[in-house]
Image (cartoon, rainbow, N blue to C red; front, top):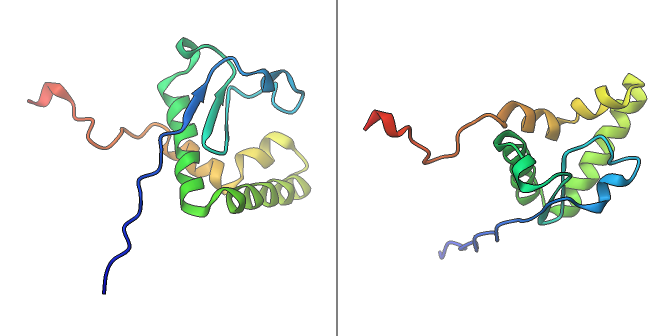
Length: 118
């Protein structure tokens, strides 16, 4: 039996100072993933490694679940949390995809060894 080879996913596009952050629903966020593009509110120098890692984790989640399924699950979980908790911030922070991203955003990238150990 032949094993299926999967093509590596292309790196996401990064867009800085994006206009979407002037919209009321996006105004309080610093970054978001739209398909294979990561949008940031500020300049490249304003994006911390932690924020970039958080958004890259969402890209991993999209790769795992597929774009449509990721957004459907994300929206469903947000709406359930909002109905249950009656608070936008609590609803957002309790979306399982967000909890995973917040838990993992400070992880080191694989292969990033501390040079001082050499």
